[in-house]
Image 1 (spheres, rainbow, N blue to C red):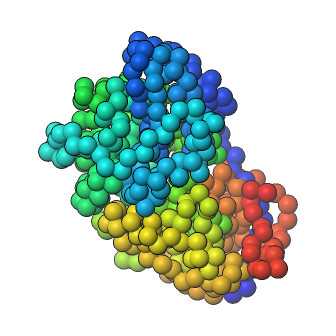
Image 2: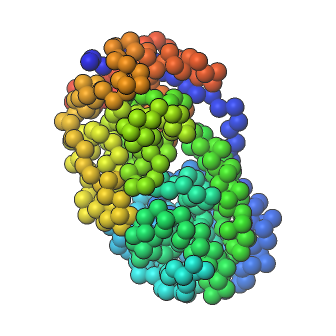
Image 3: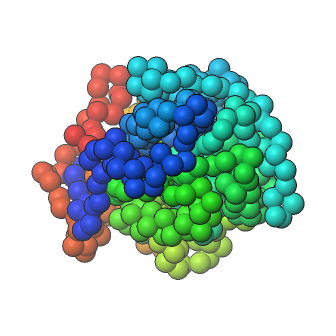
Length: 442
């Protein structure tokens, strides 16, 4: 089947909270929290920094550094990530530098140490480890985004508790938690996070929770007293889940994703967005459909084929999650650092996520291949032609509510009251090397 003409569609969200001044907001929230009563002159304060490219986070952490200094404290930032960047001290340091955590911005050192310190057992008997530099500091400030996790479903998924369990626990805790699969993620993260934030030897002063809005911008920021994090995070997660921008369709024949990467999602492309998780035992609409189910799939989209065209530079070659798509390109394949990808993938134990799909020679070839392999939704929707096939192009799974859609998908989206169509149907545009130029963000 030939590539259909596409039209731009924009989703207009009814409520989009936005923090326009991250530095000013954290300064205000830290004053309300009473940081000056917690940080005394001379105290060495460790501040977490993860591997995600979250809007406003660099500014937030840089301002936290300044707030600690204003209290007379001696701050430093430390990489808080499990097996990312090859699970090496230098690799994790360089990952932070690449995300914008430079000396000029932070105005404090980054101390990168890969081997954590054992600090005890949680209430469920699991071992707890903490970054050595953080453990030796006089206090810790934990910073992270609150959002849906890519590998499990729970009352809390990705956030401050996960940062204290896996981020601060480094590869040791990442390996241990993932070795127990979904059970480990669901049970160990809240138990170990609770142990860490309520352990006086570690002295977690506070947690700074960042929530993104539907347009991938910082929508809300809150400072939580360290001891109270286990009680407050479930409520913050409900807020984050409400703001999560799902794709506005239930079924799609072919989803084309222009780029994926670690700063976009821990699995390169967000599993919650595409409805594919690659985790044994976890609910997945494609498996239910293959078994004969024709339900609503709980809001997750059912997508026949997915092509991922490029890997972001900020991923530093880590292509974990690539196994969740069907087609990649040679330029994507050539950017893969297999050591870092396999280190991250083997640590998670979810091997599906590091399987390599078919590498098409160009973007155009990848899209043509996908169009010629569509057959998955026949039982549900019948055979498709150029007018009925549902094709969607997004820039990334941070799609920002902007899409290029075929006529077949546009007809479905017209039933919604939050979609605006811009311009006319046009052919996808490629350059002389068959790289896709058409981008819904333009």
